[in-house]
Image (cartoon, rainbow, N blue to C red; front, side):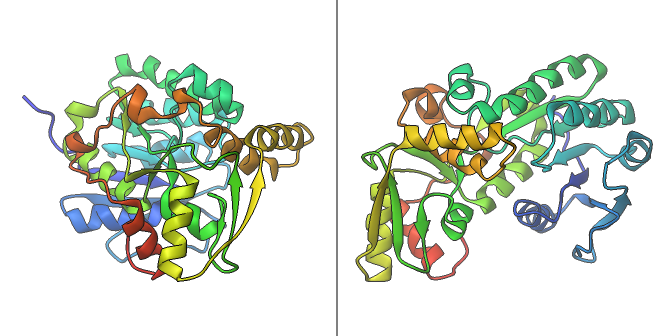
Length: 304
């Protein structure tokens, strides 16, 4: 018999870039009782249908435990956690009786050691998810969502190498490295599907994608959508990885983005999880979209 929908859902880090789309998708789907867990110092607001639990900024276990009791699923969206901190949250969730834990993955395939070697800052994520396997015997299952780069967020923030305001682009190497990307709304839809049909996604990574795109494809789509010729600069992906790593070694967190973009734009075959793993889009009811259509929607400020 298929496992029933996980109804009571609590979101940790609910006010971030991914939190709002996930909460909106859960509310739109119906059938979920949604709680946002926030830091006491946070001024974030949520729709009236969302319950709010506030705890100290360090998320202490003695406050976290009672907040998690009665929750079927915990979605952890805190990006800055160390593996030790994340594992403590997992311990507390298992003790509280949480049935499904979704860890703060939401990026590259950290289940692949070659990818972690390529982008070492993801080693902590790999450790977090590996630790969750020890909680299966306690009755807490897990699902790690691998979605590659956030497409819409990456264009808006310049993370993917494009500046929408100045019409300028930084192209890494040849610009032909294929990169797995997913929109924030598609990630949110995947979360709803996982919680609605938990048996098929228990204790595994799921791999999703809105579009696989190269920088040159994105640039061509941007020039077409904006009707302008863009200014293009070049950069070495290997150099970005190296300088980013040097910054991080000195405690300069600005190197984080360079390490990641340098890694994903190297064009290493192991980084393309559509090829190495296959996609779970069909399982989760998710569609892929043409790169040109996604770019045009972002440029025009439309929902993606």
